[in-house]
Length: 405
Figure 1 (tube, one colour):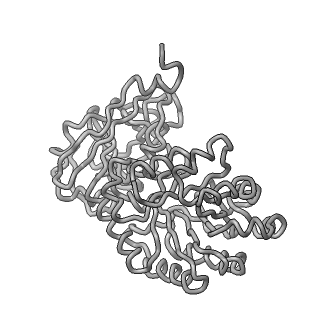
Figure 2 (figure 1 turned 90 degrees about the horizontal axis):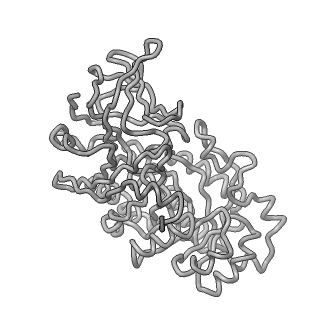
Figure 3 (figure 1 turned 180 degrees about the vertical axis):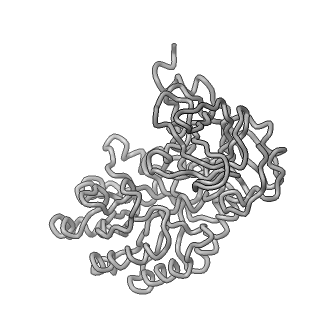
């Protein structure tokens, strides 16, 4: 299948290349991370920090390919972790930078080790702040508490809505008033909220208004405010001016250092996923191309979020072209990527190139059905591909039983 270059943001980083020559011999399935696009995203984030004085962290839950941390480190204040292992990764692979960690609940048997890596520790409940906060304070750590402003800005992604009724994420004001006491409040340096998912800054402004309404009396006593992630800062249509207004409002009103911890924005449109057609079957007039790549195993957000990823040279809207449903080879009936229209009929052996595949892929993939983990490749700024990993059968087996057998 012939590929044409495109100005679509998901593939804009490839516009200078002959894609047939670039990817023709690449074993598939394979993730390709675009070094030049990462640098471009980093430059946007660095410039934002320079203009406003805010600090930007990499949320490793979205992108944790540490081979690229040396590229990102000069652009960022540090990393954000969701637990012990990510905190250690940030400490080891972005040395000299800040390490922040938030976890829904910390384990007593891990907390001492966590203190070796984290600079800032954010708690999800006042109970845990009381239980672990004194040890964190004695170790010289900056402590925070996640708050829940109870202002939902989500529409289609309920699974990612931390402000949904009954959410376990963050302390609501009524719980704060019921459980907070003076000694516990004295442990706190900052507040943290995270309510967004792939959203623009108008939703941040809505959230910040709710934070001010609910917790505006608390913030003057804090040193920092972490506005979480989900900010699509590097998206072409992102409203940077409104984001900067939100940052400056917090800085001026409460005299706090503002942190942002985007994950998606750091690696947005900086990755591709190369796959091939293994077979074409038909059922009830629907042509189905079975790939060597699996939605369930290799891009699980497709099923979990859910969403339909972009494909170079294909349209997700009904219309002219040749319609195909793309699916994986696993036994899961729902291992379906989606329906697309292609300029030409798909044939066995054709390559299919997915876009925006650096985020929530390599950090979430799995080996269900014994599916191999795709290797990770780097596309350098000279247009050369470098293999970074060599996954195989041992990576599947080691997760299931004794290493000695």
